[in-house]
Amino acid sequence: MISLTLLKSNGGAGTETLKGFPGEVRQGELLWVDAESPTEQELADLKQRFGLDDYAVEDVVHRNQRPKLEDYGKSVFAVIHVPVVKSRKSEIVELFVFFQKSWIITIHSVESELIHAVDSRIRTRGLSPLATTPSPDLLFYIFLDFAVDAYYPILDEVENRLEELDKQAATTFKTRVKRMENVITIITTIEAVRKRLMTLRHSLTPTRDMLGMVMRGAVPFVADTSLRSFRDVYDHSFQLLETIDNDRDRTSDVRDLYISLHSASTDNTIKVLTLVATIFLPLTLLAGIYGMNFSPGFFQPGSSDPLGFYILILTMFVISLGFVYYFKRSGWI
View 1: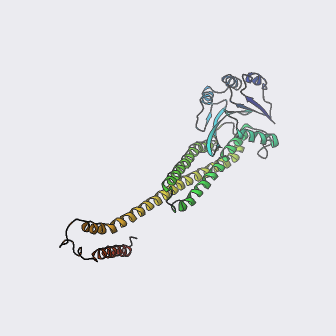
View 2: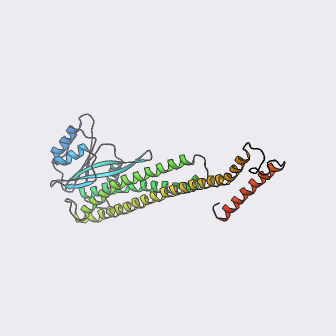
View 3: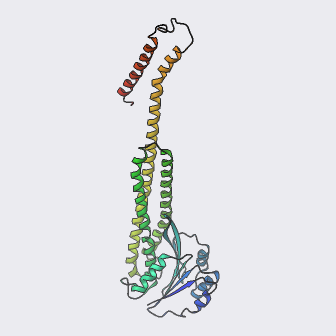
């Protein structure tokens, strides 16, 4: 059976809770101690009661550790990253685990959904169908399994977001209203998604390496019969890393798509303005010449003719049509 002891920091009551621990864990039993936001005194009591290593306890105090697995002889220390979603933003919660052949300790600074999920499973059906006899390595596997599986809904949300941005590209450039503001907002969103993927990758890569250590049999207190269960989590970590890399490439593709469309839109605008300026250049020249205050003469033919104004307007109109025809034939418009 599994004996679960919950230890929450509540103004120094932890010492009395620690005194309630059994002196020895009987054969076929497993002691699981879960400490939420323990005080320094409670950590010291845990260290003394279970012989925890000083460096491992120091990592717990300082936090901000990468996922890792370390063998301290009497016990194994592991840091597990658990991704959680808060207000459409993913955060990484650290779970510190100590385990030996007859006990396992979990320490976390905030209330953990993973702990509640594992606790519910253990109370409902124990470690079945993994084993009938409880062991710390299998409970450690469950923690890793729940933590790795927590990446799936986050990546699904990221993929759906990228799909929306991809579809939104066509409609964004159909209208000129606030186009630049929309493009800047979308590019910023893409960069936020990319940063989110980088955070998940930096967390999941050492988790995969940690599982690789377990698969190589380099971790004590992990039975060979349990390696099959860890292999499943190991495969999931590889699959998730491939998904993250594919999503990162897709963010680059979507970003390049928006930049290309924006450049094409800008080039088209510049082309239209250039064509208009080119068409009006000779017209402006003629208007400037005939707008000079000179008497009728050689330099202003037809200026004394009553029909001269209309002839000039017709000439300007013919020149404009000629430019439009030439531009269309050249494929510029």
